[in-house]
Length: 152
Ligand code: MG
Image (tube, rainbow, N blue to C red; front, side, top):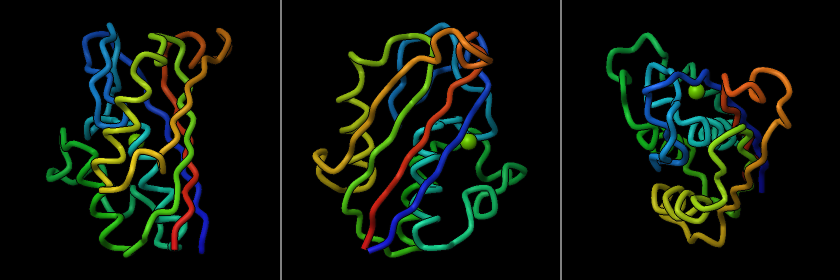
């Protein structure tokens, strides 16, 4: 068994869709990014690559590659899983976002991540918290995700 960790942060801008774990969450602000800016899928992708010591998402899918422009991040995650041949035991993650509140969307996000990876929802934990108004995340300027994964 091996363990991996990943994190990601993206700036938020009014009028952009807020994509978290492959789910579009209703919000007046969303991620600015070359791809769809899905911080949670980027963090999980890096955690899977990290568990396999296979570099990181930026090196496998450079943000100057036209192929990944506006790409759904599920592509990166599925590709990382295929490349590493990892079998996922479980994933835990934390999203830090000031608003909107994610509680009503958490199970939809868990199901979406589980479906992308073809695993059971019971293997995917997603938690959400605010930054208590502190720093750029607290001011609503950014969203952050951290993920840890156990593979075999
Ligand atoms: Mg990213």
